[in-house]
Length: 235
Image (cartoon, rainbow, N blue to C red):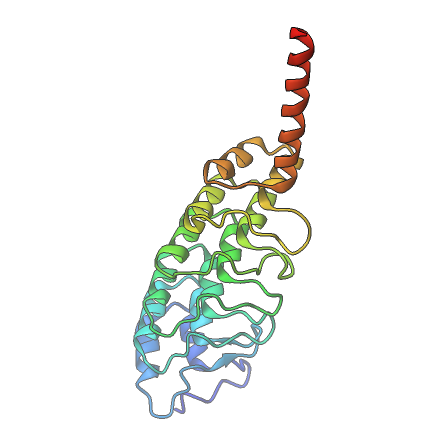
């Protein structure tokens, strides 16, 4: 039987079916078949590759088998959203599958989907602290790269919008000195936190050295007002 020939009532390649069934032995056997297309696509699921099928079905064993095969291309995109395997792994919220992918040399960590979303922005958008830290520590993801909400916001600003305090702490820690980049739309993350009364988020950002020009001007104004009142009292 030709492993590349699908059944008449099912157009999916056999390798995609085996990956979807979470069947490592079948996947291994098919990978050993002559002429097998390791990066075959599933026509029923947005052109997902075999690896993406395994990731979507949260089969770590199959993912590990595919990653060990040098023929597996980890940077291919699906046919609809333009997402890569790393996007799928982050979306699954499986730290182990993301770790497995990050061990593969040549993987593109800061790749953007069709709508400009990076894996890091997917993680911060879910408020996933551990996933965010993993992408930064082991994946060396670019924390300053815009890719959240139509490509206009950077991860820190987007996290402030969502008020994910713990994720804000992780991002600010990795950004070191540069903690208040402009979002390309209006204000800084600190400015947004202050204007929307997200006091705890604002405090975290200030603790990491963030500053906002508008906030500095407001503070200067009120210091002058208070100083003026004190002068009048003692006059």
